[in-house]
Image (cartoon, rainbow over all chains, first blue to last red; front, top):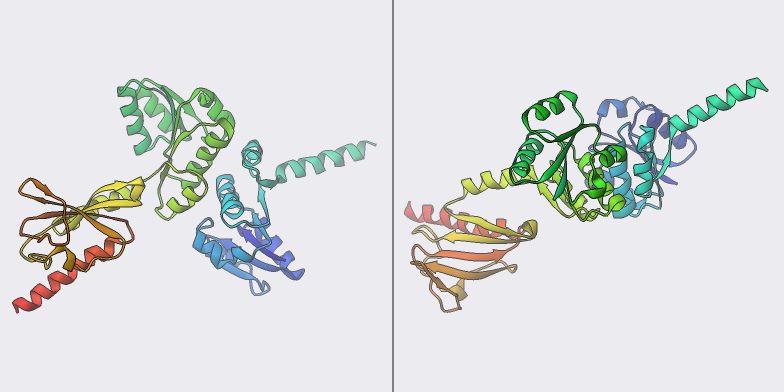
Length: 135
Length: 228
């Protein structure tokens, strides 16, 4: 699979490494070159420095042949904009964005962007652990 | 008319002032608390402190009854998201986005936000206009720059001087619309001759404009060489 990961923070970098180790073709985009360098020599995918929603940057990352685009930055508006561009302009088959602010989930839904919501997931896991202990 | 402005920076503040003076019902949404307080002290209007890309904040601002939304923050992502919410969530046909980076104009258009104002491009164009005011200048743009009207002043250095319209070597995508000569409008035909102090109007598009400008720059160089 050809996967573009937008945002090379904690989530983005870990996922890039793991997916790349699993044999997928990965391109990571971040506007901060330090974060891309932090991936180290172990990462054998493509890293692209630039403004995340810039069409030229996305093209450089190979968006025209991408199977997935994951927008994982910590800025909801940035994730929404990148996802819309990937979905509507470049027709990427599957686009998934990370929700940072839980209240923003409705905006993603309104614009038909598929999401993962870490806050919701973590609180669900913690809740089920507590409930599991009770039993 | 009910309108909402998102972003209380220089653009937002002045827009708010203008709309208020014209008697509009305006609500301002701004993220920064201090800015909100300052504006609320200064202008008697509804100021909401909050994130303009949050649907609940926009509902508080009265988006359901709004006729116009102006997203004028300094952040292009934010302005795009606001216009998308207004259009897809509340069916507001008139939402205007400020674009800070001219590179994003095409992106906004591709995503269906077609009423945009790019502050950077506007300022750049105005300054550019001042630079080349005496050779050829854009006097009017149509459909945000898709079509432009260019005015060429014919002075003694202009190598078009005394030539016939049919002999001009013009780029493909432009047309000579009119010539203004001594307050008289001439509708040029092939055998019209270009005279001193004519002002020629050309309809073209933005991508051809540099080619037209080049015609005159080259002319200037040639003239300088001849002089020597």
